[in-house]
Length: 403
Image (tube, rainbow, N blue to C red):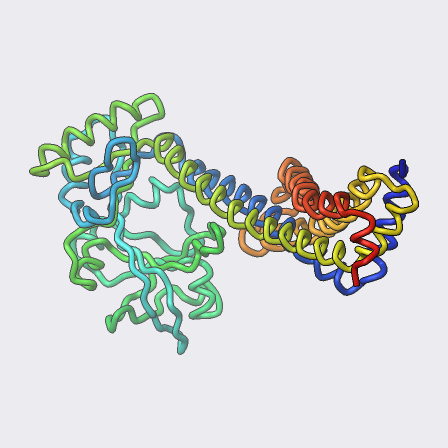
């Protein structure tokens, strides 16, 4: 019987005999393995980054979202997105004793201009409480005040990036004017940098009084409400009080109140599902690579029919031929898997560094790499078995007659 290393040598010779075909077949496995590693690793890194960013807001934070979540869900559908108002925020702050502060949030993406430049940015309407609730720091000037809110003043606080884009420096932006939706706003402050989340620049934003935003954009609702509990121990009590106040303010229970832990749990579940979906799509590309291996091996069996007949006539057993062709298929998947690991790791590092601002080690998951490589070998075995079995069962006389 042919030894294992002899079978490996024969497989290597067969692959070298058709280098272009071998390279193209291997490329399918490389792409599949690289896609699995890159997508899953980046998905895991993104999930960790996003959950970490939201967790940094503090365990004493509550989210009031519009619409009522269905049974077994944490987030409501889009149908109820206009159910929250500023009066809800006022009622909560006035009556919920376990609540330290409430900040409504209304946002839109729009073009702003200033300093002779134009930029598309996110404009957010909120109140003075937002600075404390989010624990933000000022780089220059001041934040929004209650007086700004009451008088619907056209003042704006810029993110550090937006201030540089419009005026070249945060310091030079104070006292300057920018145009938002055709209205002039005075810059009264600039926030310290907050960084990025999934490529979204948290410093490319403009904050205006909530009442001014409602007037400017002709809306009477809030996108959602930030609620800060008095302390971590009173979070659940604050949640119950907020729900009680809103039930009285609304004719129906068209809202959802989540604690930080509940929100993070729901967010993590959604991101986990997205990661699984991405990895499933990537796995399909690896299966396509396996089909490519089977097709090429079937062609190889057909082309080498006479060789198979001669080997059988000289005493080769079915097991010898089975091992030889199976080793060829596995060799393709091994080479493809090895190269795919390198490409996948490089891609995940590059994507993580570019979009997530994370070091390379944070994006690479050893279990994912091992699993992807093992799956590529399994693909080679599974898709190489039928061609190898077909070669092994050829009758020597019929094989020698094949033209």
